[in-house]
Image (cartoon, rainbow, N blue to C red):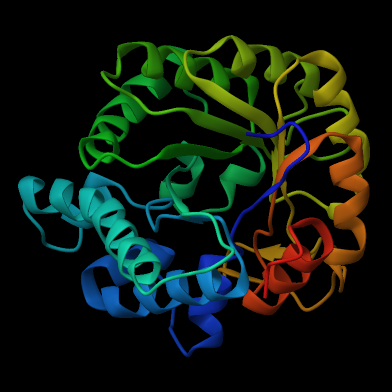
Length: 306
């Protein structure tokens, strides 16, 4: 699949939702709209497919049973809402594909498995300083993995992982999760050698590569100016494809729950360098929109892309 080809990933879900007028200043962030306005999420999934994405990522990054229960849902309803993130993305993909798409491959749905820190809504996913053991983190991740797997996504997107301990916990949870689809792992990094918590990036790559069903390893929500060296490091350490979808390098305001206006403007200019270094899944994270994915697709995808 990846010998000489690139799968284009989608871009920032929350960024596109906010651009469309959604207020995401809530502890559930984009996952709130699974409850309040799933059609808005569907519109964004569709926009990224129209822009050339080969993969759309579900709105489950910040979803948690406890978070939904704090909004007044029963446990059963909260669990079903997490499952619905996959159902929604699959329905959009199937409808979009059914319209006839000459020259395009059938898109895939990746279920977002965000870090423990995301559900805390305090910015700790960019630090990794949870104060929990590996076993405690695995106990958090395993039930949510099972809920997402229930609805049969094509892939798992284990993303924005900030610490080596959380990587170990997720590997442990995956070993206990039945019928898990292939997964990519992407870490968030403070520099071109270390995860957000200071752990060695190479050690995290080793943990991910050894986990069951790993399809690709790389980085996301990381400064794009660091990505080329991180891609090279991942590619040299494992024979797996590399996944990259950086943010715009803007500053995250955990209080306002938004990104600042500073940052890198044109990721598409950098994308061919990432491809040449070994990246085979390329997209964008926070701060990116469908227009950015269209530009990335034009830069690294087949000529048939829009």
